[in-house]
Length: 208
Image 1 (cartoon, one colour):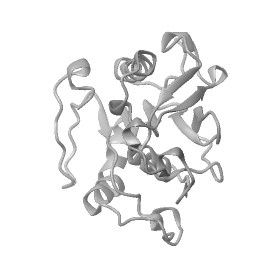
Image 2 (cartoon, one colour):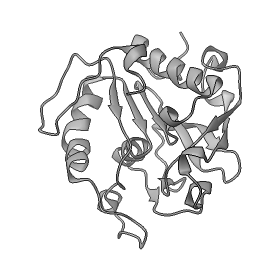
Image 3 (tube, rainbow, N blue to C red):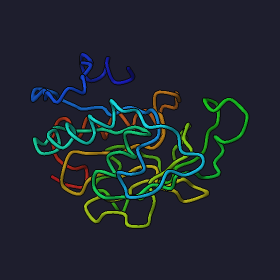
């Protein structure tokens, strides 16, 4: 687990409805496509079968962690599921560099950060463009994007949503897989924003 050495001992949570109130961070990992019925759409031709265990957790347990104010970071599917929880929709299939036959772990694209959307951005990174590699064919849609979330990073070319945070809660979503790229600027950015929500238990939008 990428964040284990930096942030402490990882704990595997079971989707049985129980809640650990002592967690410093809830990490929602990648995985199968989010169930399209959760955002009111018929499954697309390319949409894969949902992971029933993760769906149960995200529908029945995740809201309890959000209510408790536990810091949450969602990666890939985790980001998408977080967005859906707040009533966003997903684009069920898109043309993307990871659709190509090359090794998706080696497909790298640029993400532009928007420093106007979060305070003290130099606290997190001195770069406004980061390298990321993603392994996804779905993204969070701009249509019906919830007001409680703020986009702070977009794909440099297709402008799709890559990074968002909650306006008031310690919640961030990362479409890319930071554990699959070893770029210092990118990794520093991810570590810093996660460290921020763990320590302050507030949104990265809040300037102290």
